[in-house]
Structures are given as C-alpha cells and as structure tokens.
Length: 268
Image (cartoon, helix red, strand yellow):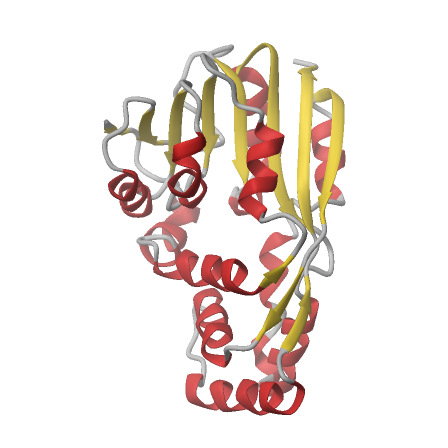
C-alpha cells in the first residue's frame, strides 16, 4: 500500500522531477555495476548478509529508489515487516510495481530528514547509497537513531573518496567541462560518514566492499555518464571515444570504493 505524505522540499525539486522522477537514470547506473563489476561477492549479496534480517524484524528503508535490492532479494526475505520510503513518488511506485503484491512490504513517500513515524518503531533502519542525496545527512542519521528500537541497528552504505575516479578522468579528457561527475558522493562518504555517525551512535563498524569494473560495452558507459548529467552531452562522440579505448585495450578498468557502516546504540 502506497501512502503520500507532505510535499517535497524545494531544494530537491530537481531530483524529484528529473533525476529520480522515474527509474531511467538510476537504472542506467545500476546496470553498469550489475553487468561489469568484478568482485568475490555480488553487491546485493554483500548487503543482504550485513542486514541480517530475521523473522519478525521491523525494517525501515530511507531512499529506497527503484527498490532494486528488494526486487532482487525478495525471495530471500524472511517474514519481516518492511516499510520502504523515498521522496520521489514516481521511482518508488516503479519499484512497488516491479515487486508486486507482497504482504511483507509497505511504502510511503517521506523525507529522510523528518520521517513521519513514531520513534523506536524498527529493529533495522537502512540507508542504501542515498545519504549523499540528503541536503543534511546528519539530520537523516538522527532520524535513523530516533526510529530504532532498543538493540536495533542502522546500516548505511556509500562510496569512498576516489570512487570511479578513472571514469571522471576519461570524461574530462573527452570534454574538460564535464567536471567530476562523482562529486555528488561528497556529503556522505566512507571517510566523512564515520565522523557523522560517531556523533550519534556509540558503536560503529565499517565493512569495505572490494570490487572494480571491467567495462567492455561503450554504450553502457555512455548511458551511465548521461544519467549523471543535467546538461547536454555529445553521446555519439563519447561513444566513439569509449569504443576506441575498448578496441585498443579490450576493456576499461574503473576502480571502485564502497562499503557499509553498521551503527548501534544511539546516543540520543
């Protein structure tokens, strides 16, 4: 069941109307990582293992997006009660439609900085690669702490400094005005996220995820780059640029840096 809460914040209007109005942009990014990541463990398997969801758990997720994780792992979800949330109705509805009817899943449009739920309501709160989109991530972290029942856990995943830097360098080589596309991670990274979380939680564990990309499809990289740009990009020129590199080297390696925080014992 999908419920609509208060209108979105003005500073997030671009994200709601364009970047995450539907699943297209996020989907392009997910597909690149899904198809070309090299790792000992798939990302969603890594997340599922860390979440440790058990029968009877009450789970809340901030910034669910297209519910990609839940769509893939719904068959392994115990008999828990899960409330998914996002500030974009369009992308959230897409995820729910893909999941289909499931008595374990409910959803609502909510602001992670001010969640319209009574405190101490959940055994697990999740922020899966989304806190860097929140204007004030420290507020969302405090909301996560408020929502946790005694003994509960907050799991937040994110990227680290230097994540996909080689792609940024290639794009700047192609067009200097591209800038660093992955600057949007900077409000909450594996480096500064620790400081923000330690202000709110007494116990914190950092779990790195080791992986990289070996990309052999130039179009997948063009789609990824296009999903991050709010300005015109020469897609045909960029496609030819990536194809030349792939034909020469067999592929393009892009280092990644990501991981998860597991926080316990709120100070508030």
